[in-house]
Length: 316
Length: 230
Image (cartoon, rainbow over all chains, first blue to last red; front, top):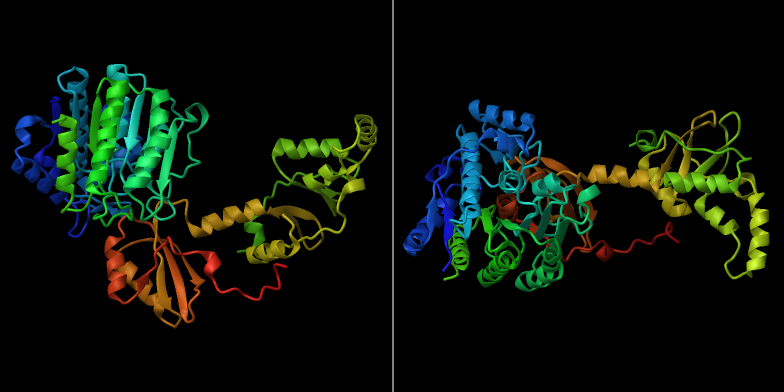
C-alpha cells in the first residue's frame, strides 16, 4: 500500500455560493463523509491547510486580479465579473487556504513523506487566467503548484493532466509559451461546451510550441473514446517529455450522471483513467502524483468517484 | 455592419510598372493574395493576385531549356501585363452582408474599397469577413452554446431570452436558423456561463426541445432554389 495524503479542511466549506449553484460546499462535505463512512480515512495521511503566501499567487496572477478578488470579497459584492463566479466575504481567504494546502502537500511528497496525494479543495482553479476569474475559479491552483515545484523544489519538468470535462483555459494560457510545463487536457469539444477553447490546433507558442496538447471529445462519447485518445495523445507525449512530477486536474464532471457535460464516462471508465495516471507517475516521476480537485457536480456520484480515486492512489 | 468598419485600411499597393517578381515578393512577404494597382492619383487601375502570377509562370511540363527561356521573358513582365483591369469594387457604404453575398456570386476573395471619388481607401477580404463574423458569434469569449427548437411564431424569442435572463446569464450572441422541419426554427444562444444545466431544464419545462448538438447539421436545412451559388 502507498502512503497517500488527503488534503481536506473544513474551512473549504466556507466559500459559499448561492443556492442552486453547482459548485457548492455540499460537494466536499458529502464526499468527505463518504470517505469517513467507508473507513478510508485511517489509511490516509490527513493534511490540514495553511494559507499560501501571496508571493506564490503572484507567480501566476496579476496584482490587479488578486486585489480585485480581495476587494470584491471585502465589499461582499456577491460575484466577480460574471454571475458564475459567486463569492462571499470569506472566498478570498479560502482560496488562499486551498493554494496553501496544496503547497504543503507538495512539500510532503517532495520530502518523501508521502508517495502521492489528493487535494479535496474548493474553489477549483483551472479556468482562472492570469488576469481574471472564470467558471467558478479564482486562483489557478494547479498552475501555482507547478510554479512552486519548479522554484521551491527545483523540478525541471512538470506534467499536468487535466481530465475535467471542461478545458482548463487558464492553465493552458499560463504555460502556453513554457516548454518546462507540459499541459495536456481531454475534455468535451469546445463547440459544445464551456469555455470554448482547447481545440486540437492549440499546441503552444514560441518556445512552448508542442508542450500543450488537447484532445477534444464529442458529446455523447465516453470510456472508449477516452481510452483511445489518452493512448494516442497523452502516453506518447509524456514518454518523450518525461515529467518529474505529475499534477492532475481531477475533474469528475465527465461522468454520465453529471449534468455539467455531455460526456458519458462510467465510474469504471474514471477508475481506468486514474489507474493510468498512477502508471504514468510510476513510469517517469517516481510515483509522484498530486491530484487536485476541479469540477464534479453530481452529489450522487462525486463521493464514489473520489473514493475510487483514493483507493487507486493507495494501491490497496 | 458597414464595410469601412471591418476593412483593412493600410493597403499595400503597386503601380502598373512594378515587375511581377517584385509584386510576388511583396505578397509572399506580407502573406496576402491581392495587390490593388493604382496610378499616381491613387486611382484604381487593376488588381493582381498570387494566382495571376502563378498563371504567368512557365508550365512545369516544359523542357528545362524552354523554362529558362520563358523565365527570361517573364522577368520583363510588368504588373500591368497580367493584372485584372475589370475589378469588382465596393464602397464603404456597402455592408458586410453585401460583401459576403458578392464573394459567393463572383468567387473573388477580396474587393478594393473605393470612395465616391474613386480613390482606394481600403480592401475587404475573406480574412476580414471571417474576423468580423467570429466577433459577431462571440466565440472568442468563454461560453456555452445551447441548441433550442422553437415554433416559428411571434414571441418565441422573447420567451427564450426572458428565461435565460431570469437566470442572470449574460449573452455572447444569439443565432436563429431555419430548420428542416416546417414551421420550426432552431435558436442558438451563446451564453457566457459554464452553468447551463438549470436553464436547460427550465427551457424544457417551458416546452422547448433542446436539440442534440450531434444531430444538428447545416446540410440538413431545406435546400433553397439557389440561383446564387451556381
